[in-house]
Length: 374
Image 1 (cartoon, helix red, strand yellow):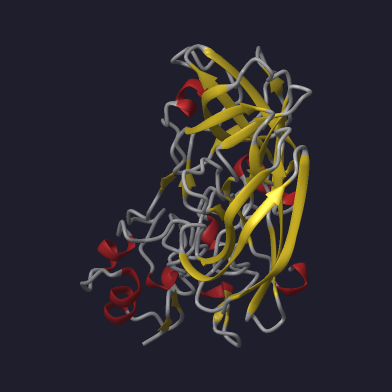
Image 2: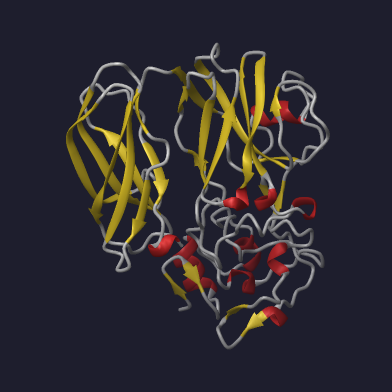
């Protein structure tokens, strides 16, 4: 047997390893390589690559693929994916435009499994170093409640996840047109009926764990909107005709309903911070509790949780801050420690939740950093 948990190592055994890790049975290589159970975000997985023999890239000493392995990029260098790349953003109200297809969820990323023959042969070795728990490497929106400040600006915060550096595909691995996705900006289109506007982040995905998109002139736009994220090769802002560029959808992403609220609200700061201690037994945290109204507001219970795998994953530990009163027009920063054990998950999340009865305050969350900020 050559697997440990969700990772398959060499030598790959079709009946034992693939059955245990992917949950598929049988001894047919073609069927295994085309299985819908394969996680497309795994770096090493069956792809369409013309050479039947890829062993030249194998690091025998460490029993893993070495830096000379390139087969996992597939014949076209897109790591097994295909999607429609937009060179013109277009008008999202026109059905022929790239942006129309984007907001209607018509631009998914297809995973091109091998189909046999000389250009895409089946290889059992493609499953060596396969990681079944791989995740999409680009993250998600931090909060669907977006606040408009006194200057009419609204900020969207996007949490970029940290993925396993060896087994999980990274944004630097995926290079449409020769440009790494880590060198793209986060783009968002905000739309409601025939009204729409487009904005991008001030920094690129490769800059760090969090991105922000600042939208201006939003004072009159309170209410519920649809938001669709995408990758943009350059920065845009507003509505109209944009210069030609490179625009790419995000895989498995559908429009998100967001609420824009004017100032005068109680809320949590958009980016809670958490870091593991060196022993992996506790998380040090810092959160902001914000009161934008003119009168004091009391939170009867602020629950700070550490969760495994995702923001909705298993709760590994928590603390509750009771009866926190924040004065009007004030931000109260709280810091402390949550006891939790780091084991068995590819990512860990700090989640802040208001337990006050009848609360409409949105949860906020962020991926917990490893000890030392790594």
